[in-house]
Image (cartoon, rainbow, N blue to C red; front, side, top):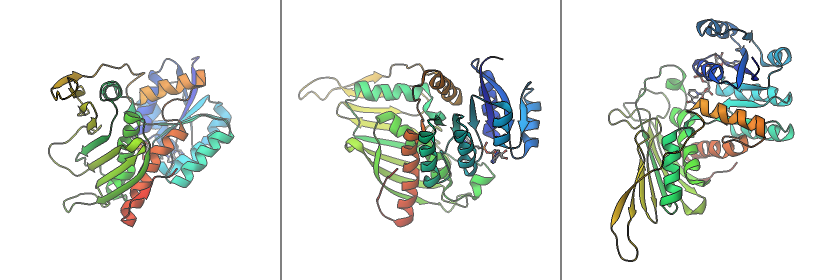
Length: 337
Ligand SMILES: NC(=O)c1ccc[n+]([C@@H]2O[C@H](COP(=O)([O-])OP(=O)(O)OC[C@H]3O[C@@H](n4cnc5c(N)ncnc54)[C@H](O)[C@@H]3O)[C@@H](O)[C@H]2O)c1
């Protein structure tokens, strides 16, 4: 036990996944687990067979008694503001689950607090940590000559049960952040405006809108179009969406599962011959939350800002809330942070 001391908050489904990632890291020791229903954390400690993990029902008490080097926040979105505020005010860095916060106002407050306390706050945008996505990004940057048109299709039909079936805007609020954030990661562009329409197909088993179509105008003139549904049965895409990027030198595809490919102009001048190009494999620090944790630990040790640092992640969250505003008002709206 001589790694960085971590306290985990939230013992639900993601909390358990985080406990496994944290205990698997050779650089981190899990010293505490907090849940307002402390019995949940106690049971999880037992089920996972963890030793030396103290259980608390409140984050403030855990900070005082355990003096962690950082906190992983895997609570429900509505609790992110409270948990992260307590940590940052005590100078304890936070690696939080998405979304940054439940509202843009709360998110802005947390970003300011991270600044004022000079304390690192990173949102774990785990779907960025995918070797296929990283190599697709490389293909776009190195071979496509820039991206002018990007499209993501996300079509799945999960039967979650629970809160997603009952919430407003389940697709836009709970899932689309991953795809919107990936569009920024792939292109290095930020969203300026969006026109979005969300709707709930008649056969949907969700109470809120489970489908959406959005078109973002991004910096550099890029257009990013998104079509998604959580009640699309048949021909499902991967959880990482199916992507098409179009640039001056050709087009590139990534289905979210197999290796990305491109068709690129082979000749010069009037020669319109196309040749197939494969993406170059790219090493990542770890898959999913293991990658976000590895980058976060490196950031604590080096002081370098990792992907998902709150100022940057706010721009992805802003895409979600602007899309919601557009669908509510029926107008194209600015994506403001
Ligand atoms: N990145 C991903 O792929 C992914 C997937 C699923 C969920 N998530 C995110 O992870 C987070 C947790 O989701 P989940 O599915 O594990 O939820 P969950 O409801 O299963 O668990 C959340 C836990 O947090 C606890 N909690 C609530 N408020 C708290 C507080 N103030 N202090 C301490 N504990 C508190 C609850 O008692 C509960 O045990 C959410 O933000 C969700 O959006 C991310």
